[in-house]
Length: 278
Image 1 (cartoon, helix red, strand yellow):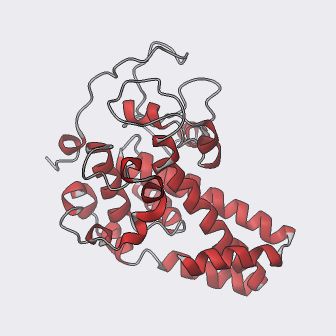
Image 2: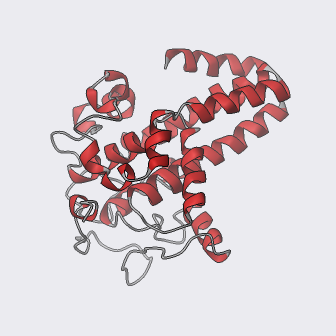
């Protein structure tokens, strides 16, 4: 973690427009397609369906974020939803803002292991898929291949921007969803936890910052519920649905997308039931 942050700082002294544009493209590819659509809205919550080859493509994009393989990421997130801001939540700010942001990643706890007994019960669906099991074990391979390709094409400036700086920036954008959106912002729904809607996190995370909306309707593929709630991941889902790559998109049952008083969300199946493997 320290080396990647040092590399991100070093990248600032190797600036080129080519490197910056490539880093921006990879930031979108890993953060939006990979984490937002792939790991989060598809694999974790099954907010839509798509062909297996496209699911695997999104998963590989997610590996480029350096946030672990799908087994680890999905299991931790499902655990978080089950006991949000309660004892046992992997990254609640109630245990400290720094802990929620990145301290829990650096703790070395056993749940960071893909074969952790704490995590495997949360991913029975992914455990049945040989590809997801393999890529969870070798999630670092896509990043290494990408790094070698950037080195061959443009030398170290592309590597420093496309790997180190881009990765560190995206990591913090993702971690802000764990930390900032449970400390600051507004609540539309009485979800019984500290989840908040925070506009600037939504902007840097492609729409994942509408976190209170998400906790109220976790299986919804749409997080930004009002016209002014920028949700780039939702726009991508709509576009992919229009060309036939995505189907059976799940949406919240709301009368309108206007701001509503704080209300209790409609009952939804608990994650342990949805992902029981039955």
